[in-house]
Image (cartoon, rainbow over all chains, first blue to last red; front, side, top):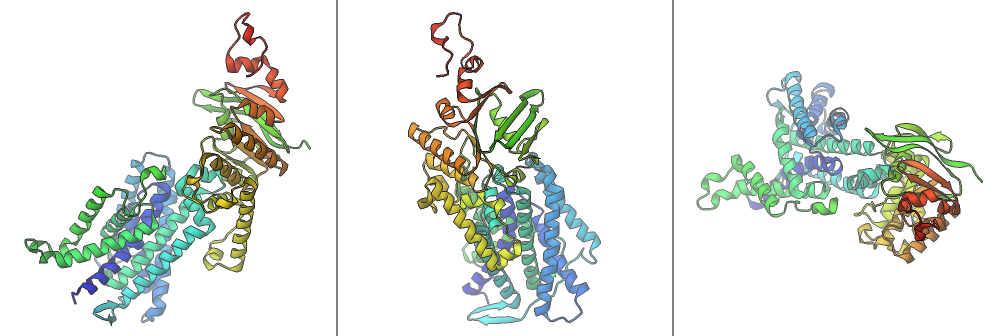
Length: 309
Length: 266
Protein backbone atom coordinates (compact mmCIF):
# COMPACT_ATOMS: atom_id res chain seq x y z
CA UNK A 1 0.00 0.00 0.00
CA UNK A 2 2.63 2.48 0.97
CA UNK A 3 4.54 2.53 -2.25
CA UNK A 4 5.96 5.76 -3.56
CA UNK A 5 3.48 6.06 -6.46
CA UNK A 6 0.63 5.55 -4.00
CA UNK A 7 2.00 8.28 -1.75
CA UNK A 8 2.42 10.61 -4.70
CA UNK A 9 -1.16 9.98 -5.76
CA UNK A 10 -2.38 10.62 -2.22
CA UNK A 11 -0.43 13.84 -2.12
CA UNK A 12 -1.70 14.95 -5.49
CA UNK A 13 -5.31 14.32 -4.44
CA UNK A 14 -4.95 16.10 -1.13
CA UNK A 15 -3.17 18.90 -2.93
CA UNK A 16 -5.93 19.27 -5.51
CA UNK A 17 -8.36 19.77 -2.67
CA UNK A 18 -6.13 22.41 -1.10
CA UNK A 19 -5.76 24.04 -4.48
CA UNK A 20 -9.50 24.26 -5.07
CA UNK A 21 -9.99 25.98 -1.72
CA UNK A 22 -6.91 28.14 -2.23
CA UNK A 23 -8.50 29.66 -5.35
CA UNK A 24 -10.97 31.42 -3.05
CA UNK A 25 -8.20 33.00 -1.00
CA UNK A 26 -6.10 33.98 -3.94
CA UNK A 27 -8.84 35.51 -6.10
CA UNK A 28 -10.22 37.62 -3.29
CA UNK A 29 -6.75 38.69 -2.24
CA UNK A 30 -5.78 39.49 -5.82
CA UNK A 31 -8.68 41.87 -6.23
CA UNK A 32 -9.30 43.47 -2.83
CA UNK A 33 -6.09 42.58 -0.92
CA UNK A 34 -8.21 40.98 1.77
CA UNK A 35 -7.39 37.65 3.35
CA UNK A 36 -10.79 36.14 3.81
CA UNK A 37 -10.14 34.02 6.87
CA UNK A 38 -13.76 32.94 6.82
CA UNK A 39 -13.13 31.05 3.58
CA UNK A 40 -12.47 27.79 5.45
CA UNK A 41 -15.93 28.13 6.94
CA UNK A 42 -17.44 28.81 3.55
CA UNK A 43 -15.92 25.47 2.55
CA UNK A 44 -17.51 23.91 5.64
CA UNK A 45 -20.96 25.34 4.92
CA UNK A 46 -20.63 24.03 1.36
CA UNK A 47 -20.19 20.55 2.82
CA UNK A 48 -23.28 20.96 5.01
CA UNK A 49 -25.26 22.33 2.08
CA UNK A 50 -24.43 19.22 0.11
CA UNK A 51 -25.22 17.00 3.09
CA UNK A 52 -28.60 18.70 3.48
CA UNK A 53 -29.48 17.87 -0.09
CA UNK A 54 -28.53 14.26 0.49
CA UNK A 55 -30.30 13.83 3.83
CA UNK A 56 -33.40 15.93 3.54
CA UNK A 57 -34.17 16.44 -0.14
CA UNK A 58 -33.16 13.35 -2.05
CA UNK A 59 -35.11 10.16 -1.44
CA UNK A 60 -33.22 7.36 0.30
CA UNK A 61 -31.15 5.18 -1.93
CA UNK A 62 -30.75 7.67 -4.79
CA UNK A 63 -28.11 6.52 -7.22
CA UNK A 64 -24.90 8.37 -6.40
CA UNK A 65 -24.42 9.32 -10.04
CA UNK A 66 -27.57 11.41 -9.68
CA UNK A 67 -27.01 12.39 -6.08
CA UNK A 68 -23.48 13.81 -6.43
CA UNK A 69 -24.32 16.48 -9.02
CA UNK A 70 -27.37 17.55 -7.03
CA UNK A 71 -25.32 17.67 -3.83
CA UNK A 72 -22.77 19.72 -5.68
CA UNK A 73 -25.46 22.18 -6.73
CA UNK A 74 -26.84 22.38 -3.18
CA UNK A 75 -23.40 22.88 -1.67
CA UNK A 76 -22.51 25.48 -4.28
CA UNK A 77 -25.70 27.46 -3.68
CA UNK A 78 -25.05 27.59 0.05
CA UNK A 79 -21.35 28.40 -0.22
CA UNK A 80 -21.79 31.02 -2.94
CA UNK A 81 -24.62 32.71 -1.05
CA UNK A 82 -22.58 32.84 2.13
CA UNK A 83 -19.46 34.06 0.33
CA UNK A 84 -21.36 36.78 -1.53
CA UNK A 85 -23.33 37.69 1.59
CA UNK A 86 -20.10 38.00 3.57
CA UNK A 87 -18.74 40.35 0.93
CA UNK A 88 -21.90 42.42 0.83
CA UNK A 89 -22.62 42.76 4.52
CA UNK A 90 -19.31 42.19 6.28
CA UNK A 91 -16.51 43.34 3.97
CA UNK A 92 -17.99 45.97 1.67
CA UNK A 93 -18.88 48.39 4.48
CA UNK A 94 -15.23 48.17 5.52
CA UNK A 95 -13.77 48.86 2.11
CA UNK A 96 -11.23 51.60 2.58
CA UNK A 97 -10.97 50.95 6.31
CA UNK A 98 -7.54 50.06 7.71
CA UNK A 99 -6.62 46.51 6.79
CA UNK A 100 -6.89 45.23 10.33
CA UNK A 101 -10.64 45.87 10.45
CA UNK A 102 -11.70 43.48 7.64
CA UNK A 103 -9.16 40.94 8.88
CA UNK A 104 -10.72 40.84 12.33
CA UNK A 105 -14.17 40.82 10.75
CA UNK A 106 -13.11 37.76 8.79
CA UNK A 107 -12.00 35.97 11.93
CA UNK A 108 -15.23 36.92 13.68
CA UNK A 109 -17.27 35.73 10.73
CA UNK A 110 -15.42 32.45 10.71
CA UNK A 111 -16.22 31.83 14.39
CA UNK A 112 -19.82 32.90 13.85
CA UNK A 113 -20.30 30.50 10.95
CA UNK A 114 -18.82 27.63 12.95
CA UNK A 115 -21.07 28.29 15.91
CA UNK A 116 -24.19 28.72 13.80
CA UNK A 117 -23.62 25.35 12.18
CA UNK A 118 -22.72 23.71 15.49
CA UNK A 119 -25.81 25.00 17.27
CA UNK A 120 -28.42 24.82 14.57
CA UNK A 121 -27.54 21.96 12.25
CA UNK A 122 -28.91 18.75 13.70
CA UNK A 123 -26.10 16.61 15.06
CA UNK A 124 -23.37 18.88 13.76
CA UNK A 125 -21.62 19.19 17.11
CA UNK A 126 -20.06 15.84 16.32
CA UNK A 127 -18.86 14.44 13.04
CA UNK A 128 -21.80 13.72 10.75
CA UNK A 129 -21.68 10.86 8.33
CA UNK A 130 -21.44 11.95 4.70
CA UNK A 131 -22.17 9.47 1.92
CA UNK A 132 -18.83 8.13 0.75
CA UNK A 133 -17.78 6.93 -2.67
CA UNK A 134 -15.61 4.14 -1.44
CA UNK A 135 -15.42 1.70 -4.34
CA UNK A 136 -11.73 1.28 -5.17
CA UNK A 137 -9.84 0.79 -8.38
CA UNK A 138 -6.30 -0.44 -8.84
CA UNK A 139 -4.22 1.36 -11.41
CA UNK A 140 -0.85 -0.36 -11.41
CA UNK A 141 0.38 -0.18 -7.85
CA UNK A 142 -1.91 2.73 -7.03
CA UNK A 143 -5.30 2.27 -5.44
CA UNK A 144 -7.82 5.08 -5.70
CA UNK A 145 -11.41 5.49 -4.65
CA UNK A 146 -14.33 6.73 -6.71
CA UNK A 147 -14.22 9.86 -4.58
CA UNK A 148 -10.67 10.46 -5.75
CA UNK A 149 -11.73 10.22 -9.37
CA UNK A 150 -14.46 12.77 -8.69
CA UNK A 151 -11.93 15.05 -7.01
CA UNK A 152 -9.35 14.93 -9.75
CA UNK A 153 -11.89 15.39 -12.54
CA UNK A 154 -13.54 18.26 -10.70
CA UNK A 155 -10.20 19.94 -10.12
CA UNK A 156 -9.20 19.66 -13.78
CA UNK A 157 -12.55 20.90 -15.09
CA UNK A 158 -12.77 23.77 -12.60
CA UNK A 159 -9.22 24.93 -13.07
CA UNK A 160 -9.21 24.86 -16.85
CA UNK A 161 -12.59 26.57 -16.87
CA UNK A 162 -11.29 29.28 -14.57
CA UNK A 163 -8.10 29.77 -16.52
CA UNK A 164 -10.12 30.25 -19.70
CA UNK A 165 -12.62 32.51 -17.97
CA UNK A 166 -10.00 34.83 -16.54
CA UNK A 167 -7.89 35.04 -19.68
CA UNK A 168 -10.49 35.19 -22.40
CA UNK A 169 -13.88 36.34 -21.19
CA UNK A 170 -14.94 39.92 -20.88
CA UNK A 171 -15.60 39.59 -17.16
CA UNK A 172 -12.28 37.84 -16.71
CA UNK A 173 -10.46 40.69 -18.42
CA UNK A 174 -12.31 43.11 -16.20
CA UNK A 175 -11.13 41.05 -13.22
CA UNK A 176 -7.51 41.29 -14.30
CA UNK A 177 -7.93 45.02 -14.82
CA UNK A 178 -9.51 45.46 -11.40
CA UNK A 179 -6.75 43.44 -9.76
CA UNK A 180 -4.08 45.61 -11.39
CA UNK A 181 -5.66 49.00 -10.72
CA UNK A 182 -9.18 49.25 -9.33
CA UNK A 183 -9.50 53.03 -9.72
CA UNK A 184 -8.54 53.02 -13.37
CA UNK A 185 -10.72 49.99 -13.97
CA UNK A 186 -13.69 51.97 -12.66
CA UNK A 187 -12.92 54.83 -14.99
CA UNK A 188 -12.81 52.38 -17.87
CA UNK A 189 -16.44 51.62 -17.12
CA UNK A 190 -15.95 48.49 -15.05
CA UNK A 191 -18.33 48.05 -12.14
CA UNK A 192 -15.68 46.97 -9.66
CA UNK A 193 -18.21 46.07 -6.98
CA UNK A 194 -19.68 43.54 -9.34
CA UNK A 195 -16.26 42.13 -10.14
CA UNK A 196 -15.54 41.70 -6.44
CA UNK A 197 -18.82 39.84 -6.01
CA UNK A 198 -17.87 37.56 -8.91
CA UNK A 199 -14.51 36.83 -7.27
CA UNK A 200 -16.19 35.88 -4.00
CA UNK A 201 -18.76 33.77 -5.84
CA UNK A 202 -16.12 31.84 -7.78
CA UNK A 203 -14.19 31.26 -4.55
CA UNK A 204 -17.36 29.98 -2.87
CA UNK A 205 -18.15 27.69 -5.79
CA UNK A 206 -14.67 26.17 -5.79
CA UNK A 207 -14.83 25.71 -2.02
CA UNK A 208 -18.13 23.87 -2.41
CA UNK A 209 -16.63 21.55 -5.02
CA UNK A 210 -13.75 20.83 -2.66
CA UNK A 211 -16.19 20.30 0.20
CA UNK A 212 -18.21 17.71 -1.68
CA UNK A 213 -14.99 15.96 -2.64
CA UNK A 214 -13.90 16.04 1.00
CA UNK A 215 -17.14 14.51 2.20
CA UNK A 216 -17.15 11.79 -0.45
CA UNK A 217 -13.52 10.96 0.31
CA UNK A 218 -13.47 10.99 4.10
CA UNK A 219 -17.07 9.99 4.79
CA UNK A 220 -17.81 12.56 7.46
CA UNK A 221 -18.04 16.30 7.97
CA UNK A 222 -18.10 18.47 11.08
CA UNK A 223 -18.35 22.12 11.93
CA UNK A 224 -14.62 22.46 12.53
CA UNK A 225 -13.48 20.92 9.24
CA UNK A 226 -13.00 24.36 7.70
CA UNK A 227 -10.38 25.49 10.14
CA UNK A 228 -7.48 23.24 9.26
CA UNK A 229 -8.43 22.88 5.60
CA UNK A 230 -8.76 26.64 5.34
CA UNK A 231 -5.41 27.19 6.97
CA UNK A 232 -3.74 24.66 4.67
CA UNK A 233 -5.38 26.15 1.61
CA UNK A 234 -4.27 29.62 2.68
CA UNK A 235 -0.77 28.20 3.07
CA UNK A 236 -1.07 26.75 -0.43
CA UNK A 237 -2.14 30.13 -1.79
CA UNK A 238 0.80 31.88 -0.17
CA UNK A 239 3.15 29.10 -1.22
CA UNK A 240 2.12 29.43 -4.85
CA UNK A 241 2.12 33.24 -4.77
CA UNK A 242 -1.05 34.83 -3.47
CA UNK A 243 -3.06 36.59 -6.13
CA UNK A 244 -2.08 34.07 -8.80
CA UNK A 245 -4.66 31.39 -9.65
CA UNK A 246 -2.13 29.00 -11.15
CA UNK A 247 0.01 29.56 -8.08
CA UNK A 248 -2.86 28.50 -5.85
CA UNK A 249 -3.23 25.20 -7.66
CA UNK A 250 0.51 24.58 -7.84
CA UNK A 251 0.94 25.57 -4.19
CA UNK A 252 -1.83 23.18 -3.21
CA UNK A 253 -0.30 20.27 -5.06
CA UNK A 254 3.21 20.99 -3.80
CA UNK A 255 1.91 21.26 -0.27
CA UNK A 256 -0.17 18.09 -0.52
CA UNK A 257 2.66 16.03 -1.93
CA UNK A 258 5.26 17.41 0.48
CA UNK A 259 3.02 16.78 3.45
CA UNK A 260 2.18 13.24 2.36
CA UNK A 261 5.74 12.25 1.53
CA UNK A 262 7.11 13.78 4.70
CA UNK A 263 4.70 11.94 6.95
CA UNK A 264 5.33 8.69 5.08
CA UNK A 265 9.08 8.71 4.76
CA UNK A 266 10.68 11.07 7.22
CA UNK A 267 10.82 8.44 9.96
CA UNK A 268 13.19 6.40 7.80
CA UNK A 269 15.86 9.07 8.25
CA UNK A 270 18.09 7.98 11.15
CA UNK A 271 17.40 10.02 14.26
CA UNK A 272 13.97 11.18 13.05
CA UNK A 273 12.01 8.02 13.85
CA UNK A 274 9.80 9.98 16.20
CA UNK A 275 8.77 12.51 13.58
CA UNK A 276 6.93 10.32 11.05
CA UNK A 277 3.26 9.58 10.66
CA UNK A 278 0.12 11.52 10.12
CA UNK A 279 0.33 13.46 13.37
CA UNK A 280 3.39 15.29 12.09
CA UNK A 281 1.97 16.08 8.66
CA UNK A 282 0.89 19.59 9.61
CA UNK A 283 4.27 20.35 11.09
CA UNK A 284 5.97 19.56 7.79
CA UNK A 285 3.37 21.47 5.82
CA UNK A 286 3.95 24.64 7.79
CA UNK A 287 7.73 24.13 7.85
CA UNK A 288 7.57 24.16 4.07
CA UNK A 289 5.65 27.42 4.21
CA UNK A 290 8.31 28.97 6.44
CA UNK A 291 11.07 27.83 4.10
CA UNK A 292 9.34 29.26 1.05
CA UNK A 293 8.65 32.53 2.79
CA UNK A 294 12.29 32.78 3.81
CA UNK A 295 13.74 32.17 0.39
CA UNK A 296 10.98 33.24 -1.97
CA UNK A 297 8.62 35.54 -0.10
CA UNK A 298 6.50 36.24 -3.17
CA UNK A 299 5.68 32.51 -3.46
CA UNK A 300 6.48 30.07 -6.25
CA UNK A 301 4.68 31.89 -9.07
CA UNK A 302 4.19 35.24 -7.39
CA UNK A 303 5.47 38.47 -8.78
CA UNK A 304 7.56 40.88 -6.86
CA UNK A 305 5.40 43.44 -5.14
CA UNK A 306 7.00 46.19 -7.17
CA UNK A 307 5.48 44.76 -10.34
CA UNK A 308 2.02 44.71 -8.91
CA UNK A 309 1.96 48.27 -7.69
CA UNK B 1 -22.83 72.90 -34.29
CA UNK B 2 -22.87 74.29 -30.79
CA UNK B 3 -24.89 71.79 -28.83
CA UNK B 4 -23.31 71.46 -25.39
CA UNK B 5 -21.84 68.04 -24.66
CA UNK B 6 -20.71 68.75 -21.16
CA UNK B 7 -22.18 71.35 -18.87
CA UNK B 8 -20.82 72.01 -15.42
CA UNK B 9 -23.00 74.44 -13.44
CA UNK B 10 -21.77 76.14 -10.34
CA UNK B 11 -19.50 73.24 -9.39
CA UNK B 12 -17.95 73.58 -5.94
CA UNK B 13 -15.76 70.97 -4.31
CA UNK B 14 -14.78 71.26 -0.68
CA UNK B 15 -12.52 68.97 1.31
CA UNK B 16 -13.28 69.83 4.90
CA UNK B 17 -12.47 73.50 5.20
CA UNK B 18 -10.55 73.66 1.94
CA UNK B 19 -12.39 74.78 -1.15
CA UNK B 20 -10.52 73.26 -4.07
CA UNK B 21 -13.00 74.32 -6.75
CA UNK B 22 -15.35 77.26 -6.28
CA UNK B 23 -18.57 77.72 -8.32
CA UNK B 24 -17.15 76.94 -11.71
CA UNK B 25 -19.41 77.13 -14.76
CA UNK B 26 -18.02 75.36 -17.72
CA UNK B 27 -19.27 74.09 -21.05
CA UNK B 28 -17.83 71.94 -23.80
CA UNK B 29 -19.71 71.95 -27.09
CA UNK B 30 -19.74 69.18 -29.64
CA UNK B 31 -16.86 69.25 -32.06
CA UNK B 32 -14.83 71.50 -29.79
CA UNK B 33 -11.38 71.16 -28.31
CA UNK B 34 -11.32 73.03 -25.03
CA UNK B 35 -8.30 73.63 -22.86
CA UNK B 36 -8.16 73.98 -19.12
CA UNK B 37 -5.05 75.63 -17.76
CA UNK B 38 -3.95 77.03 -14.47
CA UNK B 39 -0.97 77.10 -12.13
CA UNK B 40 -0.14 74.07 -10.01
CA UNK B 41 -2.69 73.50 -7.29
CA UNK B 42 -5.35 75.53 -9.09
CA UNK B 43 -7.85 72.68 -8.82
CA UNK B 44 -7.69 71.43 -12.40
CA UNK B 45 -7.40 67.76 -11.51
CA UNK B 46 -10.02 68.07 -8.78
CA UNK B 47 -12.37 69.59 -11.33
CA UNK B 48 -11.55 66.74 -13.73
CA UNK B 49 -12.36 64.24 -11.03
CA UNK B 50 -15.72 65.91 -10.49
CA UNK B 51 -16.44 65.45 -14.17
CA UNK B 52 -15.59 61.74 -14.15
CA UNK B 53 -17.56 60.84 -11.03
CA UNK B 54 -14.49 60.12 -8.90
CA UNK B 55 -15.62 63.01 -6.70
CA UNK B 56 -19.19 64.07 -6.18
CA UNK B 57 -19.24 67.89 -6.22
CA UNK B 58 -20.22 69.43 -2.91
CA UNK B 59 -22.45 71.82 -4.81
CA UNK B 60 -23.53 72.19 -8.40
CA UNK B 61 -24.19 69.69 -11.15
CA UNK B 62 -22.35 68.18 -14.06
CA UNK B 63 -24.46 67.06 -16.97
CA UNK B 64 -23.53 65.21 -20.11
CA UNK B 65 -25.75 65.77 -23.15
CA UNK B 66 -28.43 67.21 -20.94
CA UNK B 67 -28.52 64.48 -18.30
CA UNK B 68 -26.97 64.91 -14.87
CA UNK B 69 -24.12 62.46 -14.45
CA UNK B 70 -24.46 59.58 -12.01
CA UNK B 71 -21.93 59.71 -9.16
CA UNK B 72 -20.28 56.41 -10.10
CA UNK B 73 -17.19 56.42 -12.34
CA UNK B 74 -18.20 53.33 -14.29
CA UNK B 75 -21.60 54.84 -15.06
CA UNK B 76 -19.99 58.09 -16.20
CA UNK B 77 -17.89 56.08 -18.62
CA UNK B 78 -20.97 54.27 -19.77
CA UNK B 79 -22.73 57.60 -20.31
CA UNK B 80 -19.95 58.60 -22.70
CA UNK B 81 -17.07 60.38 -20.96
CA UNK B 82 -13.64 58.77 -21.13
CA UNK B 83 -10.35 59.99 -19.75
CA UNK B 84 -6.62 59.50 -19.63
CA UNK B 85 -4.37 60.18 -16.67
CA UNK B 86 -1.66 62.59 -15.70
CA UNK B 87 0.50 59.64 -14.71
CA UNK B 88 0.17 56.72 -17.08
CA UNK B 89 -2.20 54.18 -15.64
CA UNK B 90 -2.30 51.42 -18.18
CA UNK B 91 -2.85 47.86 -17.10
CA UNK B 92 0.84 47.18 -17.25
CA UNK B 93 0.68 43.40 -17.25
CA UNK B 94 -1.86 43.13 -20.01
CA UNK B 95 -1.15 43.23 -23.71
CA UNK B 96 -1.80 46.28 -25.84
CA UNK B 97 -4.89 44.67 -27.35
CA UNK B 98 -6.21 43.56 -23.96
CA UNK B 99 -5.90 47.10 -22.64
CA UNK B 100 -8.09 48.38 -25.46
CA UNK B 101 -10.54 45.54 -24.95
CA UNK B 102 -10.90 46.49 -21.30
CA UNK B 103 -11.72 49.97 -22.51
CA UNK B 104 -14.55 48.46 -24.53
CA UNK B 105 -16.04 46.92 -21.40
CA UNK B 106 -19.14 49.09 -21.29
CA UNK B 107 -19.81 48.69 -24.99
CA UNK B 108 -19.86 44.93 -24.96
CA UNK B 109 -22.40 42.68 -23.42
CA UNK B 110 -21.81 39.22 -22.22
CA UNK B 111 -23.99 37.06 -20.08
CA UNK B 112 -22.28 34.59 -17.79
CA UNK B 113 -23.95 31.68 -19.52
CA UNK B 114 -23.19 32.67 -23.06
CA UNK B 115 -19.57 33.11 -21.97
CA UNK B 116 -19.42 29.73 -20.29
CA UNK B 117 -21.14 27.97 -23.15
CA UNK B 118 -19.28 29.98 -25.79
CA UNK B 119 -22.29 30.21 -28.04
CA UNK B 120 -22.07 31.65 -31.55
CA UNK B 121 -23.37 35.00 -30.32
CA UNK B 122 -20.55 35.20 -27.86
CA UNK B 123 -17.91 34.41 -30.44
CA UNK B 124 -19.31 36.99 -32.81
CA UNK B 125 -19.41 39.67 -30.11
CA UNK B 126 -15.86 38.80 -29.19
CA UNK B 127 -14.73 39.06 -32.80
CA UNK B 128 -16.51 42.37 -33.35
CA UNK B 129 -14.94 43.73 -30.21
CA UNK B 130 -11.50 42.70 -31.35
CA UNK B 131 -12.05 44.27 -34.76
CA UNK B 132 -13.04 47.58 -33.20
CA UNK B 133 -10.06 47.43 -30.90
CA UNK B 134 -7.71 46.73 -33.78
CA UNK B 135 -9.22 49.59 -35.74
CA UNK B 136 -8.35 51.91 -32.85
CA UNK B 137 -4.84 50.52 -32.61
CA UNK B 138 -4.39 51.25 -36.29
CA UNK B 139 -5.72 54.76 -35.70
CA UNK B 140 -2.98 55.47 -33.15
CA UNK B 141 -0.42 53.44 -35.10
CA UNK B 142 0.18 50.64 -32.64
CA UNK B 143 -1.51 47.77 -34.47
CA UNK B 144 1.79 46.00 -35.03
CA UNK B 145 2.38 45.83 -31.28
CA UNK B 146 -0.94 44.29 -30.31
CA UNK B 147 0.57 41.42 -28.37
CA UNK B 148 3.26 43.37 -26.54
CA UNK B 149 2.82 43.88 -22.82
CA UNK B 150 1.81 47.46 -22.11
CA UNK B 151 4.67 47.94 -19.66
CA UNK B 152 7.22 47.19 -22.38
CA UNK B 153 6.12 50.03 -24.65
CA UNK B 154 8.15 53.22 -24.81
CA UNK B 155 6.71 56.18 -22.95
CA UNK B 156 5.18 58.01 -25.90
CA UNK B 157 3.44 54.88 -27.11
CA UNK B 158 2.07 54.18 -23.65
CA UNK B 159 0.48 57.62 -23.74
CA UNK B 160 -1.06 56.88 -27.12
CA UNK B 161 -2.31 53.53 -25.90
CA UNK B 162 -4.03 55.26 -23.01
CA UNK B 163 -5.84 57.44 -25.51
CA UNK B 164 -6.86 54.41 -27.56
CA UNK B 165 -8.11 52.68 -24.45
CA UNK B 166 -10.19 55.72 -23.58
CA UNK B 167 -11.57 55.95 -27.14
CA UNK B 168 -12.52 52.28 -26.96
CA UNK B 169 -15.43 53.15 -24.72
CA UNK B 170 -16.85 55.13 -27.67
CA UNK B 171 -17.07 58.39 -25.75
CA UNK B 172 -18.71 61.62 -26.85
CA UNK B 173 -16.22 63.52 -24.75
CA UNK B 174 -12.59 62.68 -24.11
CA UNK B 175 -10.77 64.18 -21.14
CA UNK B 176 -6.99 64.35 -21.50
CA UNK B 177 -5.05 65.03 -18.31
CA UNK B 178 -1.68 66.44 -19.36
CA UNK B 179 -1.31 64.32 -22.49
CA UNK B 180 2.11 65.70 -23.39
CA UNK B 181 3.68 65.52 -19.94
CA UNK B 182 7.21 64.23 -20.35
CA UNK B 183 7.13 64.24 -24.16
CA UNK B 184 9.76 65.64 -26.44
CA UNK B 185 8.72 68.34 -28.97
CA UNK B 186 8.25 65.86 -31.79
CA UNK B 187 6.05 63.56 -29.71
CA UNK B 188 4.08 66.61 -28.65
CA UNK B 189 3.48 67.48 -32.27
CA UNK B 190 2.20 64.01 -33.12
CA UNK B 191 -0.08 64.16 -30.09
CA UNK B 192 -1.45 67.43 -31.40
CA UNK B 193 -2.27 65.80 -34.71
CA UNK B 194 -3.81 62.88 -32.89
CA UNK B 195 -6.10 65.18 -30.91
CA UNK B 196 -7.23 66.91 -34.10
CA UNK B 197 -7.90 63.52 -35.64
CA UNK B 198 -9.94 62.53 -32.60
CA UNK B 199 -12.01 65.67 -32.94
CA UNK B 200 -12.59 64.78 -36.58
CA UNK B 201 -14.06 61.49 -35.41
CA UNK B 202 -16.77 63.53 -33.73
CA UNK B 203 -15.44 63.40 -30.20
CA UNK B 204 -15.27 66.60 -28.18
CA UNK B 205 -12.02 66.97 -26.27
CA UNK B 206 -11.14 68.65 -22.99
CA UNK B 207 -7.43 69.02 -22.29
CA UNK B 208 -5.53 69.95 -19.16
CA UNK B 209 -2.01 70.96 -20.02
CA UNK B 210 0.99 72.93 -18.86
CA UNK B 211 2.52 73.25 -22.30
CA UNK B 212 1.12 76.62 -23.36
CA UNK B 213 2.18 76.44 -26.96
CA UNK B 214 0.45 73.07 -27.27
CA UNK B 215 -2.75 74.37 -25.67
CA UNK B 216 -2.94 77.58 -27.68
CA UNK B 217 -2.27 75.78 -30.97
CA UNK B 218 -4.82 73.14 -30.26
CA UNK B 219 -7.79 74.61 -28.51
CA UNK B 220 -10.81 76.44 -29.84
CA UNK B 221 -11.39 77.80 -26.39
CA UNK B 222 -9.32 77.97 -23.22
CA UNK B 223 -10.44 78.39 -19.62
CA UNK B 224 -8.07 79.45 -16.88
CA UNK B 225 -8.54 78.15 -13.38
CA UNK B 226 -6.77 80.00 -10.57
CA UNK B 227 -7.16 79.07 -6.93
CA UNK B 228 -10.26 77.05 -7.66
CA UNK B 229 -12.06 79.77 -9.58
CA UNK B 230 -12.48 80.34 -13.27
CA UNK B 231 -10.55 83.49 -14.04
CA UNK B 232 -10.92 83.88 -17.79
CA UNK B 233 -12.42 81.93 -20.63
CA UNK B 234 -12.13 82.60 -24.31
CA UNK B 235 -10.15 82.00 -27.47
CA UNK B 236 -6.41 81.56 -27.31
CA UNK B 237 -5.81 85.20 -28.22
CA UNK B 238 -8.12 86.54 -25.55
CA UNK B 239 -6.59 84.37 -22.86
CA UNK B 240 -3.02 85.06 -23.90
CA UNK B 241 -3.64 88.78 -23.83
CA UNK B 242 -5.26 88.79 -20.41
CA UNK B 243 -3.05 90.37 -17.80
CA UNK B 244 -4.64 88.52 -14.93
CA UNK B 245 -3.53 85.22 -16.48
CA UNK B 246 0.02 86.44 -16.73
CA UNK B 247 -0.16 87.64 -13.17
CA UNK B 248 -1.48 84.32 -11.96
CA UNK B 249 1.38 82.43 -13.61
CA UNK B 250 4.24 84.83 -13.17
CA UNK B 251 3.17 87.14 -10.35
CA UNK B 252 2.38 90.84 -10.53
CA UNK B 253 4.86 92.86 -12.59
CA UNK B 254 7.13 95.30 -10.82
CA UNK B 255 6.36 98.92 -11.41
CA UNK B 256 8.25 99.92 -14.54
CA UNK B 257 9.89 96.56 -15.17
CA UNK B 258 10.45 96.66 -18.93
CA UNK B 259 10.46 92.87 -19.45
CA UNK B 260 6.90 92.32 -18.26
CA UNK B 261 5.12 95.26 -19.76
CA UNK B 262 4.13 93.41 -22.90
CA UNK B 263 1.88 91.04 -21.05
CA UNK B 264 2.45 87.89 -23.04
CA UNK B 265 2.76 84.39 -21.75
CA UNK B 266 6.09 82.97 -22.81
